[in-house]
Image 1 (spheres, one colour):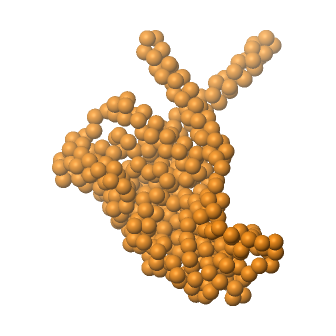
Image 2 (cartoon, one colour):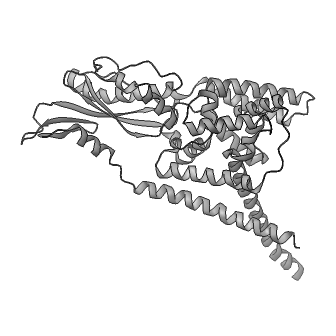
Image 3 (cartoon, helix red, strand yellow):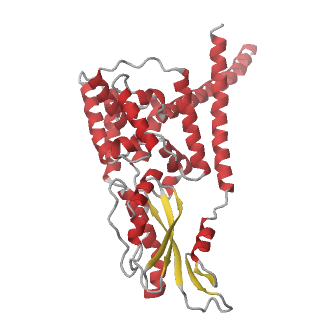
Length: 406
């Protein structure tokens, strides 16, 4: 009895915290919706000088004209428009100022759901400056930034989309077409389905070569989803799935596909096959463990059970509040597979890789958000099942009493 009471207390506490975490997440989303977005107003203020005013021509097209009574009929000094593009983590919106001759004068980022580290690399490589003074008579184009190609393309296409209403007004033609969501599906997405199916088969087979098959699958996954595409799913992917970033389009759906498949497998088998057979960063840690002859990890301390849960909840809440799930990243995946990320991520990655020589999978055993997600899903699934079974028992008891009375 003494052992059961603390166990029951812990379960009750976890139930309370599980419900509280959902409420906190909903509250963060609600409060984020109350934030006023003044980016467009600030943009207008920055591009208009004294004696100038903004006149709206169409929903996405404005012109800057001298102050006066007949502003709508006045000849435009400059044209202003807005466009959006789809990057790795989500959409970004830019505002552009165009001269009557068609030259790009000013570009400003108004909002972004893109992964911050990728966008910082684009800015460091001065891609926005390369687009200035190009003429919109032709499609706006610059070479993609190595390591942030999708973000580069998103930025260029957003400005090109912003230029289209101006092209129509000045030159009576347009160049861009709105792509459907299906256009963003790639061979990597099909590969994700095949790799996941192989992982499920390997985990269920009784073949004597099971370990070798799993090692081969991990190696292939590391090459394809790690070094080639950096398509690992993370806390930002979870946030994007919950808050619907994938509905407006993302440049890479592979992490979302792997995440949804993993959730489905967890709901059915109470295990995450992704961690064991597909995770590229887990594979890298395993390789280093063999090199350093690392010891097996001890039982996880309570701190390392709750710390990733708190980190994941905080990351999801920040993403919900600022409407940018990809803007808050603490995983080392970007540094490990693309050298993309801040100094703190670089230090964290080096620490994890060095620790992997001594302890097996230190990241997986300590801060990985996937364990926190798995724990949450399994716990709530079991709670739901227990609630259902109790309800069924209560329904059976009155029936048994009636039969006894008869």
